[in-house]
Length: 276
Image (cartoon, rainbow, N blue to C red; front, side, top):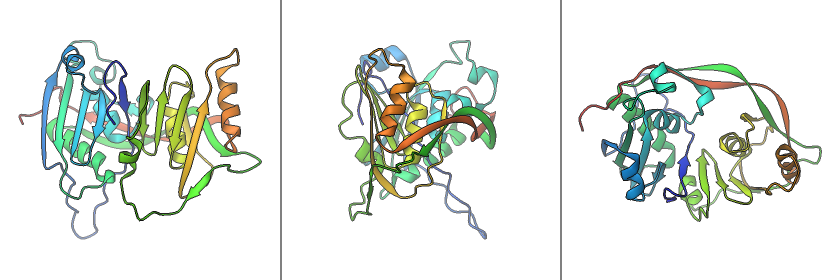
């Protein structure tokens, strides 16, 4: 995706960390080459750069303050983070410093490796140490309506093009938010979410500007789907009502409650990276 500033792109993607083998650790996924340098927001705008994450077949580009880079790498929103005050509630120019990451993917890398590579890069260069936890957050559960799902399941395809590459196509106007399996376009009119799974749709709803808070998937549906959710612009109808009506056309509904969500607890991070 390439949505330039002025049509700011904030891209959040979700992925797991690679498992360790029982007898010996697997090789940590790393970029072939990675350069991190400070960047001023004014210079990023002047160069028509992308704020967030941009992935092509060979390269990964990320721009943002360290907090945003951590959110991208671990696929979490602000509510799911715990850590030092300077990072979560920056007050000085040093705390707010932005960074540009330019990295080359190794040959044959898949989309599932991109975020573990970014995690490892932040751990190596910013001395980032984290641990995982969980907590209860107010939000919504995405569930099946009484008429069941009204979207099509996709059969596995011989085309092995990565999901992020497909989602990157045709972003359209407005702000685009990309999560693990969804692309949300927040234009001046409709809000449109395209997802490959109910879990991806829940992530897209969480990351959107719809003010739903944390949405978790409780549909029980597995597999790959073609899900397109259109939420029309305000016409005097309450926003939540418009969301509920749009979801009902897909055979889905939201139920409010507390959800257990994963948290990332940042135990240590340096304000500046080590030398390239």
